[in-house]
Amino acid sequence: MSTTITLPSPAKLNLFLHIVGRRADGYHELQTLFQFLNYGDDLTLTLTPEQPGARLSEPVTGVADDDNLVIRAANALARRAGKTLPGVTINLQKRLPMGGGLGGGSSNAATTLVGLNHLWRLNLSTDELADIGLALGADVPVFVRGHAAFGEGVGEQLTPVTPPEDWFVVLKPECSINTGKIFSEEGLTRNTPRIKIAPAFEGDASRYRNDCEDVVRKLYPEVNRSLDWLAQFGPARLTGTGACIFGRFPTESAARIIWESKPSGITGFVAQGVNISPLHKKLTELN
Ligand SMILES: C[C@@](CO)(OP(=O)(O)O)[C@H](O)COP(=O)(O)OP(=O)(O)OC[C@H]1O[C@@H](n2ccc(N)nc2=O)[C@H](O)[C@@H]1O
Ligand SMILES: Nc1ncnc2c1ncn2[C@@H]1O[C@H](COP(=O)(O)OP(=O)(O)O)[C@@H](O)[C@H]1O
Image (cartoon, rainbow, N blue to C red; front, top):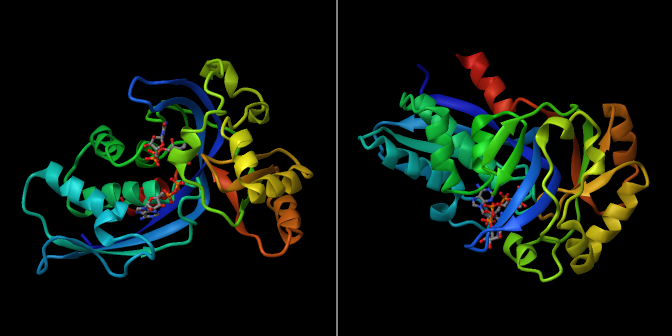
């Protein structure tokens, strides 16, 4: 078996995000629809039998290596394996904006868990990897499992679903949003009625909301303006707690026309929503 592997670490969108309650520990109970994008970061994992431990080949600006979810995931997996393992050097090619609601850090953690399970030949089950991932962040399990899903609880109770694989214009307004701040806002909607999955995805997900959107629009004028601009062309919504927003289009060319006309100075990308994670597609090709 090769001792080096390059794997995708895709973004996710929350096609909708409903807040349906609050747990005793203060965490919010969600109902959300996760879909992956065919766009994201790449991780190259290289085994280094002569040098034990996990390290990054280059640091990520603004994140100490020991706090990086890639290193935390590798260390958590090694602890669970409970045996001496070859070291690993991880090169992270970052494309996703950090703290944008696209789940980049969580996806990086999941790709590390799945990739190292393969390279270290640990044979841990998907359930075990998702369990290790949940301790690192609520969004890690969906990336480990690799199928678009209706998420409940804090997003870890997952039911696979197959929403349409539409195209998206994703924009990153020039602000960064702290998830904890949004969840602690007094004006946040926390009592959206629970929906059932079976009928929910037969129809158009555009009738569902992101319950963080009103609060984020009020606090961040840049997001408010970008949402108003994108909404001229079709349904536009916030992903996670922002700051990224997305507009949905039936074809790539329709999405690209809007992308080309975006206001100057705003960054982002065009990508397709996919129900099987690019990570899992790549692993299937390798096996
Ligand atoms: C909102 C979502 C939706 O996919 O995505 P992002 O916007 O982060 O991508 C996730 O549930 C984000 O989950 P996770 O990544 O674990 O959240 P963290 O940043 O660790 O949460 C920061 C803080 O927000 C609050 N928090 C978070 C999640 C939740 N369901 N209820 C909460 O009340 C908690 O106070 C927590 O300490
Ligand atoms: N490998 C990583 N990539 C991105 N962020 C990371 C990483 N490791 C740790 N973090 C931290 O996690 C936070 C959340 O990042 P990210 O998952 O990209 O955003 P979000 O949860 O909003 O989708 C970042 O602000 C950063 O401090």
